[in-house]
Amino acid sequence: IEDAKQLIEDYMTAYPGIRVFQATKKSMVYKGKKIPNAYGRWKHNYGIREMKQYLPQREYEKKASAMYRGCVNYPVQSTPADIMGNVAVALGDVWGVEREDWKEVESLVIAHELCGGIHPYVALCEMGAKLINLVHDNTFWEVPNENIDEASKLIELVSEGLPWEQLGWYLPVDMKIEPFWGFKEEE
Image 1: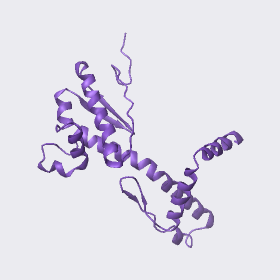
Image 2: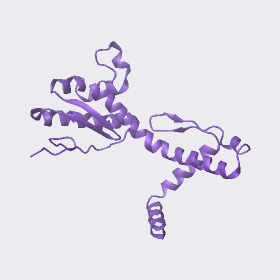
Image 3: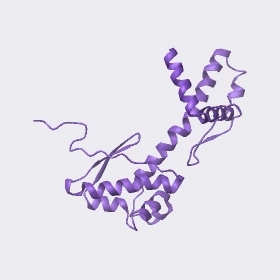
Protein backbone atom coordinates (compact mmCIF):
# COMPACT_ATOMS: atom_id res chain seq x y z
CA ILE A 1 0.00 0.00 0.00
CA GLU A 2 2.83 2.38 0.81
CA ASP A 3 4.47 1.70 -2.56
CA ALA A 4 1.17 2.38 -4.33
CA LYS A 5 0.70 5.64 -2.43
CA GLN A 6 4.23 6.69 -3.36
CA LEU A 7 3.65 5.82 -7.02
CA ILE A 8 0.52 7.99 -7.07
CA GLU A 9 2.31 10.84 -5.32
CA ASP A 10 5.24 10.65 -7.75
CA TYR A 11 2.81 10.68 -10.69
CA MET A 12 0.95 13.71 -9.31
CA THR A 13 4.24 15.50 -8.71
CA ALA A 14 5.36 14.80 -12.28
CA TYR A 15 2.02 16.05 -13.67
CA PRO A 16 0.77 18.79 -11.32
CA GLY A 17 -2.01 19.81 -13.67
CA ILE A 18 -3.89 16.61 -12.82
CA ARG A 19 -4.68 17.78 -9.30
CA VAL A 20 -5.91 21.13 -10.63
CA PHE A 21 -8.04 19.32 -13.23
CA GLN A 22 -9.54 17.04 -10.57
CA ALA A 23 -10.22 19.89 -8.15
CA THR A 24 -11.87 21.95 -10.89
CA LYS A 25 -14.17 19.09 -11.88
CA LYS A 26 -15.08 18.37 -8.24
CA SER A 27 -15.91 22.03 -7.68
CA MET A 28 -18.10 22.04 -10.79
CA VAL A 29 -19.96 18.96 -9.52
CA TYR A 30 -20.61 20.56 -6.14
CA LYS A 31 -21.92 23.69 -7.84
CA GLY A 32 -24.19 21.60 -10.08
CA LYS A 33 -22.41 22.70 -13.26
CA LYS A 34 -22.22 20.62 -16.43
CA ILE A 35 -18.88 18.96 -17.30
CA PRO A 36 -17.93 19.24 -21.00
CA ASN A 37 -15.78 16.96 -23.07
CA ALA A 38 -13.55 18.25 -25.88
CA TYR A 39 -16.39 18.05 -28.41
CA GLY A 40 -18.77 20.00 -26.20
CA ARG A 41 -20.89 17.04 -25.11
CA TRP A 42 -21.99 17.49 -21.50
CA LYS A 43 -22.42 15.45 -18.33
CA HIS A 44 -25.10 17.01 -16.15
CA ASN A 45 -24.64 17.24 -12.37
CA TYR A 46 -27.77 18.18 -10.61
CA GLY A 47 -28.70 17.74 -7.00
CA ILE A 48 -25.48 16.91 -5.18
CA ARG A 49 -26.07 19.64 -2.60
CA GLU A 50 -29.79 18.99 -2.42
CA MET A 51 -29.48 15.22 -1.84
CA LYS A 52 -27.46 15.85 1.32
CA GLN A 53 -30.58 16.70 3.27
CA TYR A 54 -32.37 13.50 2.18
CA LEU A 55 -29.67 10.86 2.63
CA PRO A 56 -27.85 9.48 5.66
CA GLN A 57 -24.32 10.93 5.83
CA ARG A 58 -22.49 7.75 4.79
CA GLU A 59 -24.80 7.14 1.83
CA TYR A 60 -24.48 10.77 0.74
CA GLU A 61 -20.67 10.54 0.90
CA LYS A 62 -20.73 7.41 -1.29
CA LYS A 63 -23.04 9.02 -3.86
CA ALA A 64 -21.06 12.27 -3.89
CA SER A 65 -17.78 10.38 -4.26
CA ALA A 66 -19.20 8.40 -7.20
CA MET A 67 -20.42 11.64 -8.84
CA TYR A 68 -17.01 13.25 -8.40
CA ARG A 69 -15.19 10.24 -9.89
CA GLY A 70 -17.61 10.09 -12.79
CA CYS A 71 -17.13 13.75 -13.58
CA VAL A 72 -13.34 13.60 -13.36
CA ASN A 73 -13.38 10.59 -15.70
CA TYR A 74 -16.04 11.91 -18.06
CA PRO A 75 -13.91 14.19 -20.30
CA VAL A 76 -11.08 11.65 -20.34
CA GLN A 77 -13.31 8.76 -21.39
CA SER A 78 -16.00 10.43 -23.49
CA THR A 79 -13.65 12.43 -25.74
CA PRO A 80 -11.88 9.32 -27.13
CA ALA A 81 -15.29 7.68 -27.56
CA ASP A 82 -16.40 10.67 -29.63
CA ILE A 83 -13.19 10.53 -31.67
CA MET A 84 -13.84 6.86 -32.44
CA GLY A 85 -17.45 7.65 -33.30
CA ASN A 86 -16.32 10.27 -35.79
CA VAL A 87 -13.81 7.86 -37.31
CA ALA A 88 -16.54 5.21 -37.61
CA VAL A 89 -18.87 7.69 -39.31
CA ALA A 90 -16.15 8.66 -41.80
CA LEU A 91 -14.64 5.25 -42.52
CA GLY A 92 -17.57 2.92 -41.90
CA ASP A 93 -20.18 5.00 -43.69
CA VAL A 94 -22.49 5.08 -40.70
CA TRP A 95 -24.33 8.09 -42.18
CA GLY A 96 -24.40 6.97 -45.80
CA VAL A 97 -22.43 8.76 -48.51
CA GLU A 98 -25.31 8.18 -50.94
CA ARG A 99 -27.48 10.53 -48.85
CA GLU A 100 -27.80 14.01 -50.25
CA ASP A 101 -27.27 15.59 -46.83
CA TRP A 102 -23.88 13.96 -46.12
CA LYS A 103 -22.27 17.41 -46.30
CA GLU A 104 -24.06 18.31 -43.06
CA VAL A 105 -21.95 15.72 -41.19
CA GLU A 106 -18.69 17.36 -40.14
CA SER A 107 -16.61 14.17 -39.92
CA LEU A 108 -17.66 13.13 -43.45
CA VAL A 109 -16.81 16.54 -44.87
CA ILE A 110 -13.39 16.59 -43.16
CA ALA A 111 -12.58 13.02 -44.23
CA HIS A 112 -13.64 13.85 -47.80
CA GLU A 113 -11.26 16.84 -47.79
CA LEU A 114 -8.43 14.87 -46.14
CA CYS A 115 -8.72 12.26 -48.89
CA GLY A 116 -8.48 14.75 -51.73
CA GLY A 117 -12.15 14.89 -52.60
CA ILE A 118 -13.00 11.20 -52.40
CA HIS A 119 -15.07 9.46 -49.77
CA PRO A 120 -12.74 7.22 -47.75
CA TYR A 121 -15.54 4.68 -47.33
CA VAL A 122 -16.04 4.41 -51.09
CA ALA A 123 -12.28 4.06 -51.66
CA LEU A 124 -12.02 1.39 -48.95
CA CYS A 125 -14.97 -0.51 -50.43
CA GLU A 126 -13.31 -0.44 -53.84
CA MET A 127 -10.23 -1.98 -52.19
CA GLY A 128 -12.37 -4.68 -50.59
CA ALA A 129 -11.71 -3.36 -47.06
CA LYS A 130 -14.40 -3.95 -44.45
CA LEU A 131 -14.73 -2.38 -41.01
CA ILE A 132 -15.40 -5.40 -38.81
CA ASN A 133 -15.51 -4.03 -35.26
CA LEU A 134 -14.80 -1.12 -32.95
CA VAL A 135 -13.44 -1.94 -29.50
CA HIS A 136 -12.65 1.01 -27.23
CA ASP A 137 -10.02 2.92 -29.21
CA ASN A 138 -9.43 0.27 -31.89
CA THR A 139 -10.90 -0.42 -35.27
CA PHE A 140 -10.63 -3.89 -36.78
CA TRP A 141 -10.55 -4.30 -40.54
CA GLU A 142 -10.49 -7.10 -43.06
CA VAL A 143 -8.48 -6.08 -46.12
CA PRO A 144 -7.36 -8.16 -49.12
CA ASN A 145 -3.59 -8.67 -49.03
CA GLU A 146 -2.98 -6.74 -52.26
CA ASN A 147 -4.59 -3.59 -50.79
CA ILE A 148 -3.21 -3.61 -47.25
CA ASP A 149 -0.71 -0.79 -47.79
CA GLU A 150 -3.12 1.54 -49.58
CA ALA A 151 -6.02 0.85 -47.18
CA SER A 152 -3.76 1.26 -44.14
CA LYS A 153 -2.59 4.66 -45.33
CA LEU A 154 -6.16 5.83 -45.88
CA ILE A 155 -7.35 4.54 -42.49
CA GLU A 156 -4.38 6.18 -40.78
CA LEU A 157 -4.90 9.47 -42.64
CA VAL A 158 -8.52 9.78 -41.53
CA SER A 159 -7.95 8.42 -38.00
CA GLU A 160 -5.19 10.96 -37.33
CA GLY A 161 -6.65 13.77 -39.42
CA LEU A 162 -10.11 13.96 -37.86
CA PRO A 163 -9.02 14.79 -34.29
CA TRP A 164 -6.44 17.20 -35.66
CA GLU A 165 -8.98 19.07 -37.76
CA GLN A 166 -11.76 18.97 -35.17
CA LEU A 167 -9.81 19.52 -31.93
CA GLY A 168 -6.28 20.55 -32.92
CA TRP A 169 -4.96 17.35 -31.31
CA TYR A 170 -2.40 15.13 -32.97
CA LEU A 171 -3.12 11.55 -31.96
CA PRO A 172 -0.80 9.07 -33.63
CA VAL A 173 -2.25 5.82 -34.90
CA ASP A 174 -0.52 2.55 -34.06
CA MET A 175 -1.38 0.05 -36.72
CA LYS A 176 -0.87 -3.68 -36.45
CA ILE A 177 -1.33 -5.94 -39.45
CA GLU A 178 -1.80 -9.67 -38.94
CA PRO A 179 -3.11 -12.47 -41.12
CA PHE A 180 -5.64 -13.57 -38.50
CA TRP A 181 -7.84 -11.73 -36.05
CA GLY A 182 -6.91 -12.99 -32.59
CA PHE A 183 -6.27 -16.55 -33.70
CA LYS A 184 -3.26 -18.36 -35.06
CA GLU A 185 -3.48 -20.33 -38.24
CA GLU A 186 -3.99 -24.00 -37.55
CA GLU A 187 -1.07 -26.12 -38.59
